Length: 323
Length: 193
Image (cartoon, rainbow over all chains, first blue to last red; front, side, top):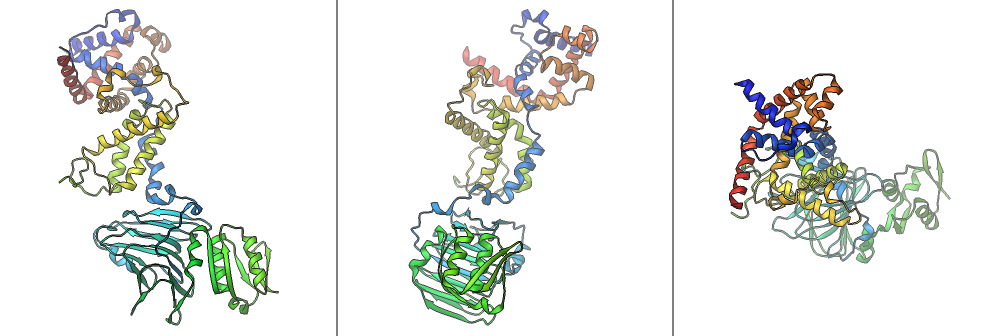
């Protein structure tokens, strides 16, 4: 029986493969013949497979793209952003140690977090699941959980960014190290780095609520809120909102900013290391516009023009000395 | 009801990364073959397939998949490949070079041939070594029995026997698939009558 079966397949096979016999490969009404024919007809496709990467290797190739999914596919020059901001919030926040709330919520179910991070001197555009957009600046990171958009619209943020938040029923919350900001639908800009002395929030239009551990503060357009980490003092003052609209184009307006804070920001933008020759230099004040898209040297020159400081470069970085 | 997300008919609303990885690895070659219906370059096809998968992962929460995940992917890949062909019109490709069977185009939403091809490749790998060697020379290298016999220094009869064994084993392994295709064939024949 087996022999007869084998003979049958031998016969079919030679109809296709052995040219001497291939003259009569017409229609044979037999399941096995049709199977052989099908296998033979698909040989081009089958043979292509040998040229392909193994599924396992291809998966390794794309897996990393799934982890940092957004940060790679949507990097775009900030210059292109048409700034018709309705709502700008500037959070300059320094002094973030990022363990916090996110760990306690992580123990429930299997919540997974997506983290997007940028490196020094880089800007990225991130689209959240609810279609809110975030432009993050240098050395910044944001995290959101798999429950984002379902149970909450919370992101955990550290660094510098502008937010364009879609209106939705769920309030949008930006959780900072020691405070949070609640909004409903807005565009705002966040700058937040992990070693610093205060949080700074600047609201240009609309309404937001700033919550620290004990209290919440309503803010109106044109207000700047400063939350000092060391003293816990919260102060509010009026600013000219126009200056802050240029943030997305790389222009940063500084109003009586301590040189120490400005240098800190520049370290993030340019990845350079600065050293103060003496401590009093740190408290020098600077007012003016720094354009992040310009070179480091260009901006150092501007600072030199308005302050009594000079910069010297050596192999360790930049040294700041008294003029 | 229309809003309900269906994924591969398993009522799992959220696709885990592990599931996604398993699915990807299982269907990767089939997906590449679908792209290769329209593209000639394997690297280009692989890039396209990988991009479609990555894009899906990013948008998975928003997508409403009407049929099943597998068909969704193959259709998406087909459409992407067609778009790509239209975009690079400069790269005109002779029809004869494409793995596309124009007569089969009416069934272009079906991906059975690609599925079957992947399973044939797997079944070939499982053939006994000597048998696989002979079979590959005939099937891939397109050598005649005489050529294989002299190449391997064996008798032509041995080639014939081994080819019979190979096809019989493939047929056994692929029974499930081939039966499905027969039903289609019969339907097509009936339609013609």
